Image (cartoon, rainbow, N blue to C red; front, top):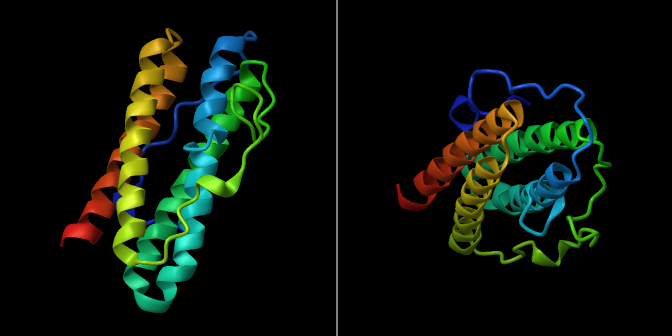
Length: 164
C-alpha cells in the first residue's frame, strides 16, 4: 500500500553510507527509533487506531494507516543509520530500556485518539529538529530533517481530520 502523497515527500531519503562508529549518534537515533515516543510507538499506535477507525470512518482509517506506513519507512531509515554508526537497532532506547506498549493511546474515542496523535507528531517534529541540531554529520542531519518534514505533513493531515 502506497501512502497518500500528502503524507510523504516525493524525494528519496538521504542515504547514510557506512561510517565510523559513533556511540553518541547511535544513542540519539535509538531514542527516535524505539523510545516510548519514537517511531515504533507511532507505528503501533497508528495500526491500532486503524482497526478502531475502520468501524466508524474509512477516511480516517485510510489516512492513519498511510501515516503508519510512512513511519515504517522512518523506522527503516533510522535502523540503517544506527547500523552505519556501529549500533544494533534493537527495540530499546539509549538507556537500554526495552520497548513497552504501555505508552500507546488505547482510548477508543475518535477525538481523543486524534488529539493524542497530534501531540505525538508535534513531539516528533521537535525531537527530529533538536537531534538534527546536535549532529555535525551533514548526511545524517539531512536524513533527520527529511523525516522532520514528513512528520510536519502528518501533523497537517491529523489537523485536517480534527478541524475540518
